Every structure is written in C-alpha cells, then in structure tokens.
Length: 217
Image (tube, helix red, strand yellow):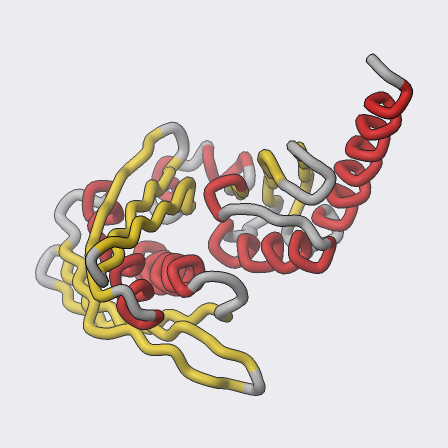
C-alpha cells in the first residue's frame, strides 16, 4: 500500500468518525456507524435509536446531517433501526416500517419507482408508475410505498388520494394524503416531508410518516 493510499484511508476513517459523532448528537439516536466508499460518497450508514424514538422521525434528521457534512448518499444506504426494546416488543414491531431501498427508472415520459420497506428482519417490495414530472414521480414513490406497506400489514388497504409540492416557510415540501382502511375503519392520513433531494425521497418519507402514525393508533 502506498503512502498516498494510507493517507487517504486515514482521512476516510476520520470523516467516518466525525460523521458518526455528529449523528449521535441527534435526539433519539443511541449509536451511529458510518462507512464511506470515497471521500464524499457514503457506502452505508447504520443508526440505532433509543427510548421511544421512531425511525421515521429520525431518518430526515440523519439525511440533513449527512447533507450538511457534504456527503453524497442514496436513501437506501441509510438504515435507521428502532430501539432494541421496540424491536423486542411484538405489538410495537408492526409500526416500524423503514425505507430500505429506493430506485427510479425513467423512460417514455414516465417514471417507475421501486421501493423496499423493512420491518425487523423482513422486507417488502412495492412498485408504481406515473408521469415523469416532479409531482408524478412523487405520486409514483408514494404509491410504491403503499403497495409495499399493504404486504407488511395484512388486511390493510392503502390508497393515495393525492400528492403535491408546496412552499412552506421558504422551503419546498411534498405533501401527501392517504386513505387507509383496516377492519372496516377508514382514516384519512396527511404526511409531509421537506424536499431536499429528489421528490421521490420526500414522498417516501411523507408517506411513511403518515402510515406510521396510523399503525401506532
């Protein structure tokens, strides 16, 4: 190994440690582990919550810290686990659906979003297609999340009423409205997430935030 490569490796380890320390300052985070595949590129981030922290609430804050650090990442590279106590409680385990992967392909003026949700050691895939516009990609991502969530929660029926891009307090957000039916109980669920990167990212977080509250009810 050359002197230059050893120096690069030392720099990577320093950035990993500094980033992990910054993530551990987020309220509700117990531990964080960061692995880079380049000076500015994230390979994987693993965060574990503490107390009653929800992965859905923590995930946007983790993304924000990574962006402020100047690192490039995909949502699928970031994994936020529920607290160990929550993972050990069967009744609570239903509510923790975490975005494990997100992929968008674009062709013929349409966008296809594929997502993978994770709950403990199980994964659930969903896919949806819409027009290749900012709002259309948000709709496709939201519907893909709902399709995967229906597989994770037997008996649930989830539908997207609408998704819009709105300006609030000087920032753009994705707002979604979800209709949820389970055991003859119908609910209309709002969700919102800041649009910091691609509209698909924000739509997934907004949708998961909406159904997470419903599953916890």
